[in-house]
Length: 317
Image (cartoon, rainbow, N blue to C red; front, top):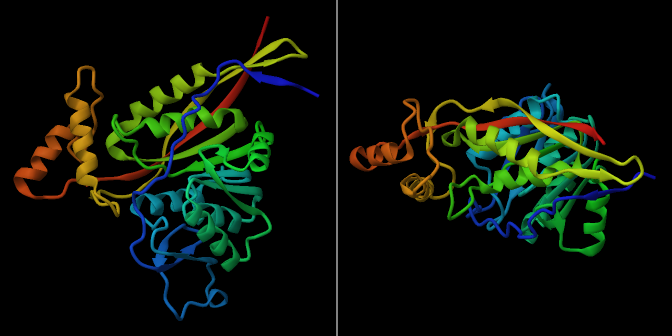
């Protein structure tokens, strides 16, 4: 049996709970499996009377709600031919992307990971509503580290076997807002097979350069050593760009995005701070925030999903 050991340890710091975008009231939705389009549920909806296949979802107060970021992520999962085989849904919320992936019937195993116990319960209930209990599993976890020791051992056993990881993370705090996505790129690598895909949602304001730089940093930070063949196994992400995007829409997301934009302005004001690409006119965060305050016109943004493919390579010595 091949044995590998991680040469460079990842940070042990967890992500913690995400309080952004929580539902304030109970909601019901239906999702078109072919297109990923999400609609509020209509009581008269009957799955068998429509040529398109649908799944049903509900969200309870205090669980993760459907946001514009959720909607574009759903479209990406429905349309991408890379969503197949063994899948991890990082930060699964109420189970939308996991259950949608299961409905495509191209998958062997789907695991949704989420920090919040109420989200896990909601995901399990949504899977039950759609008869997806057999190939979908939901685990309480901080990133890729489940709290239960047996579940943690199980997740670790999946390293090198995952075909696709999908993630719709929140913005990180007290930095440029992109740190969670950088860590997801890095922490996904041990789980990905050669040629596997990471689908990662982000607000358009971050621009493509953050993905390119983040992919490069993640690729250079990890390597594995095979004790039997005496080879170091490395690899690199290939960034394939945006695979799904909303049109230009108002900067709204189910939580306070003005506060998030203020965080971006603070980042730009720092020495060596990172800049942003905002709105149709490619303004900085500072420029578009000032425009918002002076005119009271809500800025425009796009919600997007980016694709990265992991390519392994062996370094012989």
